[in-house]
Length: 148
Image 1 (tube, rainbow, N blue to C red):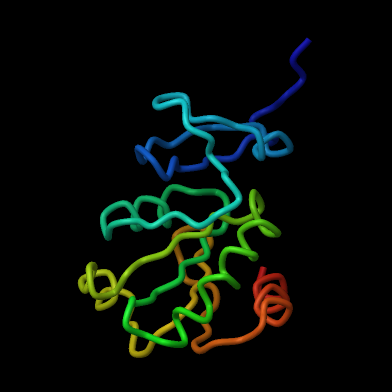
Image 2: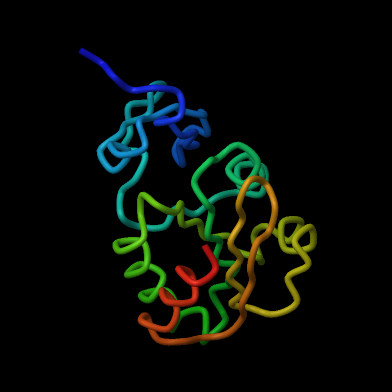
């Protein structure tokens, strides 16, 4: 007997095909996309293009944590394993996304990114918090949870 209600379900955008999926919140860790069949959460960040990023921000019920970075940026390279660790600890409560500002300058401009790395939390289509610079994993994850 299925006792799930609409209030138990959340919208999660697939990082592979951008399909919006409705999944049972408490089972979202194991959910797969109804369109492409890929896991919705893989415990690692997904790189997205600008158009996909905006869809994730606008359509996801799960907070979206974005790392705006560039390959030439030393602090960005320092934060890459921290962001990977954060994905393992924070998914599926958060969707972790990486946006390369060199490849997606319109996304950086749209979100007024002035320095990198910059991390922003989006909730219900709106930016809820932002921080820039490198930090250790414990401090970074604490910042994310404090801004939830």
